[in-house]
Image: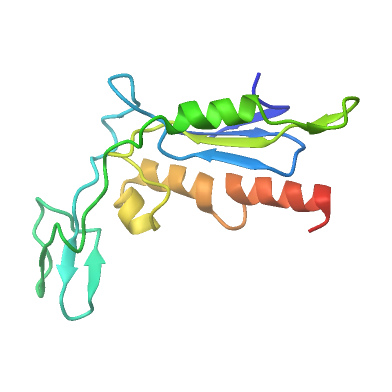
Amino acid sequence: MKGMTQFDGEYGYTTYYENDGPIIFLSQHGARGITANKPDNITNRDDGCWNSNTQECDWLHPYPQSCPPGSYRSVQECRALTLSDSHTLTIADCLYDNTRIGNGITELIPHFITVNIHRSKLDTNRDIDNGAQGSVRAIQAWEEINNLSWGFISQAKNASVNRCGW
C-alpha cells in the first residue's frame, strides 16, 4: 500500500497517495510501453499551429485539422512531445519505497502522485492547451494534477506546509 489515503481521479488517469512527510514524488509520464493507458475516448496529442503574428502556438487547432488563418502547422515551434520518458514511474517508485524520514521510532512517508495515462494522450507538464488539447477527459485529469486550488500537487504542498510550517 503506497499511502495512508489513496485518491483516484475521476477517470482513473491520476492517483494521489496522501501521506504525512514533507516530500512529494511526482511521476507524470509513467504510463509506458504496450501496457500504457491509451484510452480511445481521448484524442492523441499532435503538433500545434504557429501564429507568426502573435508568436504563439495554437494547440486547440492541431494538425491534421486546418490551422486558423495567419498560422501554419509547425513542428519546430509547436512540437507536441508524445513519447514516454524512460523509467520515470520505476524511478519514482524506487525513491518512494526507499525514502522515509524518521528517528527509528516514528517515520514520515512522502506523498506520491502519478499520471496513469500515456503522454501521447496527456502531458501534465505542459500548459492545459498543449497538454490536454481540448479533450474533456484529458482536461479533467490535467486539472486533478495541476489545479492551484484543489489539484493533487496543491493538496500535497499544503499538507507539507502544514506539517513543517513553511
